[in-house]
Amino acid sequence: MPRGIYIMELKYDRSANEALQQIEERGYARKYMNDCRPVTKTGLSFSSNERNITDWIAQPASKTSVG
Image (tube, rainbow, N blue to C red; front, side, top):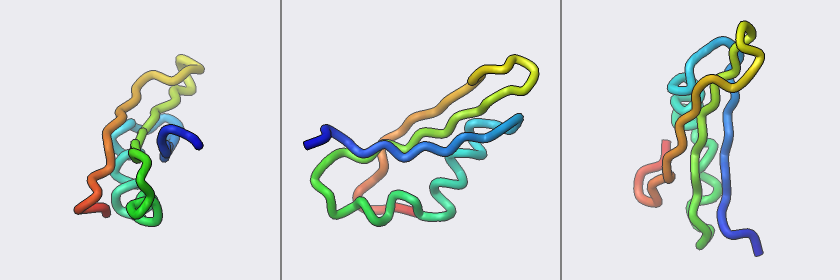
């Protein structure tokens, strides 16, 4: 059994914060809240200039308040 659930949102030329905000606003983690494994939300920012991931934010999803 996998050790955790990872929800990732990638933004192109936008911030990792915006990606994380989308995970919250659209409730991507909601359907995993009854699972016993830890849920981690990760927002990533890909830069077209750098041609690479330039920023990322990871945080655990709260089992009590999921957007």
